[in-house]
Image (cartoon, rainbow, N blue to C red):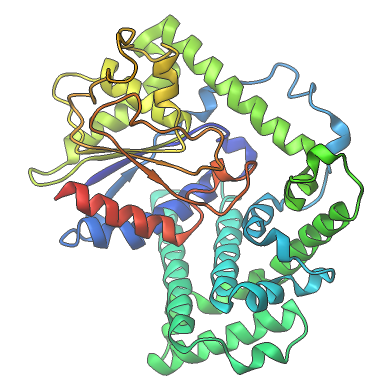
Amino acid sequence: MPLVFVHGVNNRRNLGQYEATERRRNALFNKYLVPTIAPAVAVHDFTILSPYWGEFGATPRWNNASLPRSAERLGEPAVDHIRASLGDYEFILPDDPNQTLLSVAREVSFLDAVELVCELLLEELCLEKSTTVKVDDAERSRLDRESDAFVDYCETAVEYFAAVGKPAWLDRITSDEVFLGRLQNDIDAHIAKASPRATEQLGGASVWRFSKRILNGVARVASEAVQIAKTPVDLAFRSTSRLSLSLGRGWAQQHASRFLGDVFEYMEQRNRDGSKAPIIQAILPAFAEAMTIRGPNDRLIILAHSLGALIAYDVMTTFVDATFHCDCFVTIGSQVSLFQELSKCATNAPNPANIEKDRIQRPPNVDCWLNVFDRNDVFGFGTAGVFTDTIDYAYSTGKGFLFAHGSYFQKRRFYKRLAKRLVMVLK
């Protein structure tokens, strides 16, 4: 059973996190989507195709020299993923940055803190694996199995603490370092009691090797946010989150410039070269392969994020052959409807005679279309006001306007909820 994932903007292999993000996302697809939408299909028979088009996106000629360099912090460990994860809890960050995870556990919920720690551990694993640039099929398979094992370990941890509740030791400890140590002890003891050697098989013994890196990153991000919050700022920025302010202008501008650059580059390629455009050529083989490997009873799902949704829409409406058929098109944080309103798709509908009633037909080779957006995502648009037979779902990533667009795939709850919606529409 094939699933094609089309990524969006700001994806570059040379930035060091593309493979890490892909590996983690695929592990979560396998963990939550496969058993729900295809319970009769073994994981090894569920094929995820992830065509990469980032290398054909925009390349600033002066390597983003137009960005203000005063905002850059060169040579420091990457903590953007930690900033994004802590964005859920920015307003309860303590003055002592070494009690950040403790504050989440005490002031929000203990289970939230467990899920946050698991999310950070998985991110660190994937970042570490992203340093392995070229691997053969056997090594890639091993890395994928390890990622799957880490996901299972973390899911076991969440399920365990959801059942037993907050431990008595939580009120007695005073640092995040002790908090992580106690978490590890409790989780490993539970797994070992349930099944000897299970901790080793699930990857638990090694997942905690990232504890020190997480502690340092969390403390650094929390400290920055608290210091920024104590700094006088213009009234216009007082509603802006502390983490958004601590992130700084440089990060936001860099991502915004790459977003706009990718949009302009894609449209220029498409309008000039049609199906021969490099980005289109990067996508078409995956769509063709999905059609080839699907069995007679298989469903083909196209899942696309951000600009990837427009690319997938253009491919399905303009560049595939007549045999192509998609059972469900899932767009997440997308702009397809906006580009149709602006007549910037590859195939554009006529101007509406009555904007209150006229709608564009869903592509005939698509059986259903689910669209997901976060109301904080300034790049996520609805579809029901422009297209017929689409379903819009609002989903909260828990992030502010800077992080929401790139945060859909971080939380387990997203995969679980998406799986439930897919089951409903694929019946």
